[in-house]
Amino acid sequence: MKKEQLVALIKQKKSLLCVGLDTDMEKIPAAIRHFSKDPVFEFNKLIIDATLEYAVSYKPNTAFYEAMGLKGWESLQKTIDYIGDKAFVIADAKRGDIGNTSKMYAKAFFEEMKAHAVTVAPYMGEDSVTPFLGYEGKWVIVLGLTSNKGSEDFQQLTLQNNEKLYTEVIRKVASWGDASQLMFVVGATQAEYIQAIRKIVPEHFLLIPGVGAQGGDLDAVCKYGVTKDGGLLINASRSILYASSGNDFQTAAAAEALRMKSAMEKYLF
Image (cartoon, rainbow, N blue to C red; front, side, top):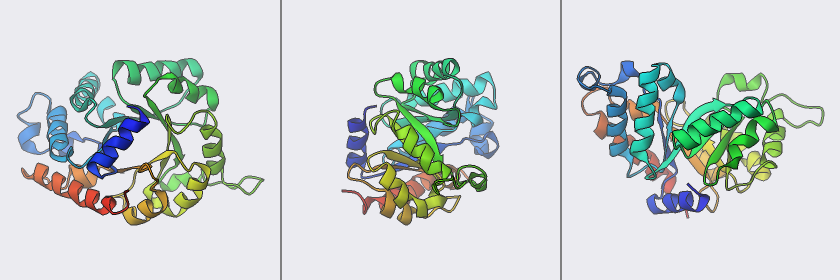
């Protein structure tokens, strides 16, 4: 999906919402878990049907599927195929290895699985990232400043030039591609840093996890991060997927997705 297509989708739906498909078998309603041949895909399908009106993107976290072995990979592929080009599909895989290995990861997610984007860890350097950049209409979403407490261990270290490590990483990675193929992950719980990050990458999209169950401030994220093209994909996972544990889970998921979409809308265009 090219940038102009993503921007058109955002304008059409007046939304920046990304639904994280971190589907946990133990949390799927019993009626699906016990009576479906593929409960993970069936649950995902129903969540997608309930939220597609409000969401511009879906982000399956591959760990939840890898943990189930071959069956999990099949559920993931069926999920990606079901979404197709109706929304922007992010394979949240956090890959990043030496060039030849990254080339194979890119082939797996872009050529075989048909995801629109994949998340990548940049700390092995340029040759671990650039193999993902060779696909037209595909995106590399690089970890910038994450929302977990451990981000303090390395990402927020102060360098000799008084810059933070994460700002140097974002600046350097931005020179390897452009805003039509590179995004950066910035955690919603780090919203106070988005304004400074925007000075480094004013045109790039930012993927913002941590709104919802993790308590990120949606208004602060939008205030400092929205651009003329939208510029953000704001992810919520558990707060939408498990808005209800009962048989009304679809209705509850749709209601939470609409609530978030409505909160974003006032900052757009």
